[in-house]
Image 1 (spheres, chains in turn green, orange):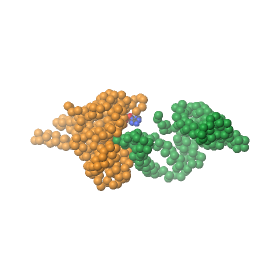
Image 2 (tube, rainbow over the protein chains, first blue to last red):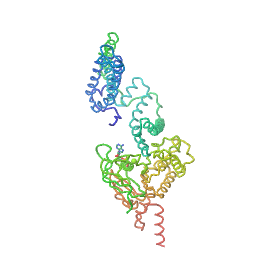
Image 3 (cartoon, rainbow over the protein chains, first blue to last red):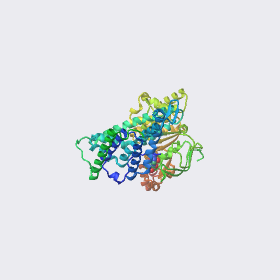
Image 4 (spheres, each protein chain N blue to C red):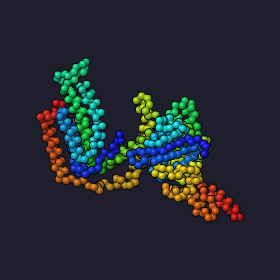
Length: 265
Length: 278
Ligand SMILES: Nc1ncnc2c1ncn2[C@@H]1O[C@H](COP(=O)(O)OP(=O)(O)O)[C@@H](O)[C@H]1O
Ligand SMILES: [Mg+2]
């Protein structure tokens, strides 16, 4: 499987046209609510809802599948460990030694696991539908210092480059008879040391050259920056933002005052 | 030639991704003890081809044999005993805390005894004139020295076949000349040398055979002297022969031979002409 280096999927759906700031605030609000709730049903709704948003925004099955492949192993692991190590209350379905499996802790384990998936998908709603430059501009417009924004942009920009260099370095060391997949896990991990060190040296060299290149092109000479493509906050964005904030406030109140979604079942 | 080929390919096709192949049917025999130059435009498949010789890439179709054994089922770590490959960028292999450690890495991977590793490392340090830097971290050396370390590190593994991918790019004239003198010496000692370069003068001066690649196919393959006479064919690959060769060819009607490769050869031919006139 090839890694998706550029998460952004170019497109022109409603999701793509949305102001990146609105999408970012949505991610924050939805994540906050999910972290406060423990209900299996809430997690299921969030997971299904996120899929629907992604699909209606024209995000490909390939990208959605990629998120599933990334998160599913963790989700399964968490669900299983939870059920084993957190004995639940109430009627036990199975009881042996320290193991006590109840419908309650199954639901709890599932909810915790699904929450991981839901959080990931909500984050990727933003990342899949927002180009890197729009993403950075959005963050800068929300108050992130410009240099941080640029640093983030460059880090993202260099991901594929670094992955390519990693491949080259692995090849170079293998050509010197380095065996990467022999022996026990400890030996294998140690075999990667020459690659990691060469990688670090190359990364530092790259960073140094890059900073010199930026400085020689007068980066930082101008304090106030303008943008080539200013962000457009349309009335629809305002409406949606108001909706998101209102819904979040309402759900927050329901959770804190009425205990909505507090229990797994 | 009745010498055994040390590398042979048949119908070699390689695709990085579905679509147009980077190598598109390469049939090749490289004789033992060759001094082969590979030239071609960027992206013509030079690196992809030589990565098949030490097993870093396995053919999508076709077969590659090194000393009569197919590479497809052999791990890189084993082929590395036979085929040394110096990467284009020395920084892609340098990691050692000292130059000595860097150079001993390959021999140690081969599972040699500690005495043998040490013997080879010291010999490589001496051969490449690196003793003064043995205890320094190679990463902080200048570019020319880093390149030398990277070649020495592969040399220390004593592979009969040595591949150098653009070894002189980024080197100043003097470092390039020093490095090439070393490579010439390795060839004289009996190594088979495969050299990728964009420097036509360097190819003309040092190599004996030349392979011209174009879009993943062999455009020309033969003795360097023959290849550089094929001006029209070379033009297809946007390759211009060394200037001294072009000069001789422009002066053809004065009686200068067409297969001149180096300045020394040009002068010889010129002097012969002069003597004949006098
Ligand atoms: N890792 C890779 N993934 C995909 N395509 C590649 C990769 N490496 C090289 N190519 C492609 O294969 C072709 C041959 O590349 P390469 O062998 O590096 O050429 P050269 O060394 O002659 O410049 C080029 O079209 C290049 O874009
Ligand atoms: Mg190349």
